[in-house]
Amino acid sequence: MNLEEVEVLFDREQVMARVKELGQQITQDYQGKNLLVVGILKGAFIFMADLVREIDLPLEIDFMDVSSYGVSTVSSGEVRIIKDLDYSIREKDVLIIEDIVDTGLTLKYIKDILTKRHPRSIRICCLLDKPSRRKADIAPEYVGFVIPDKFIVGYGLDYAEQYRNYPAVCVLKPSVYEK
Ligand code: IMP
Ligand code: MG
Image (cartoon, rainbow, N blue to C red; front, side):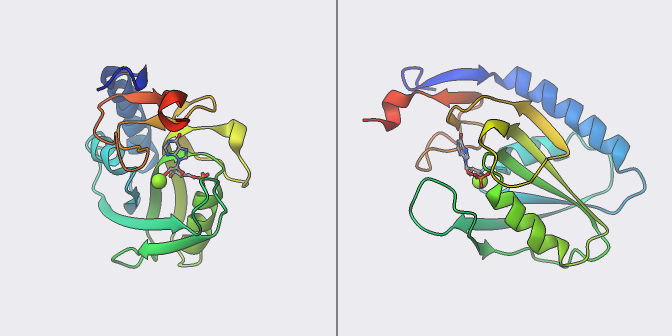
């Protein structure tokens, strides 16, 4: 990790402790259900890999990749599906895994699309929640950490596709993207 560019917000140990708690909670809540864990690419891939190993239940996994329309860094809420799920979610208890909920516009769109496909239930689990920036009416049922409005990288999250491999959840110093 280049500590001139990032500041550690939660180290790997803190993240793993919280992921373990989330896994235990989900294990309790989904007893006897038909759990399908849906990861939103690419940001959720590391969080999801750790989380599913803390869920002590039979489950299936699938992935979806979406992209916002336009080049603006501000989320428009108009989303295009790049990669859809491989299988039907009918009668499944779907748990969407996302890295971070910011405006909530992306997740609102995904949740609305998936709800139309008749799952038995649908919930959201995110590693990070920035509620101060919320624009869509979306409230994740499972949240790793509530954070202030800072730009985050590491543990799957990127800036211009970099930093996803950093093991800690880090704040990207504004000097990196303001230059
Ligand atoms: P939303 O539609 O504004 O909620 O956008 C959510 C998506 O924007 C996330 O899945 C991330 O890909 C990206 N995003 C939002 N905030 C951050 C951040 O602080 N760091 C990295 N990516 C972010
Ligand atoms: Mg994302």
